[in-house]
Length: 52
Image (cartoon, rainbow, N blue to C red; front, side, top):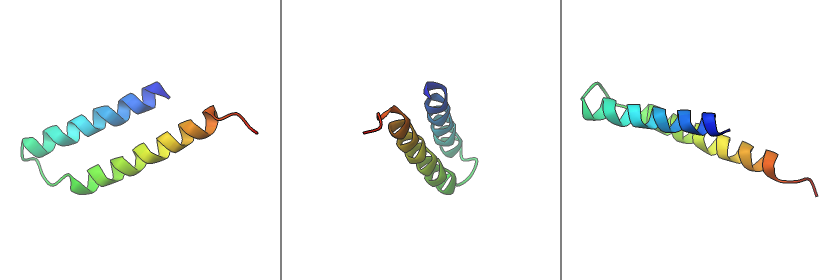
């Protein structure tokens, strides 16, 4: 999971860099990346929570 979370953060950094360099509008991609991040966090929580 740490690798996936690191990859999300790396993508976030590259989107910020692309925006700062004026390569284009990254709002849509940033929005999609936030959704991926939320899904990853939910998945991590689900597999780390012991069954009751």
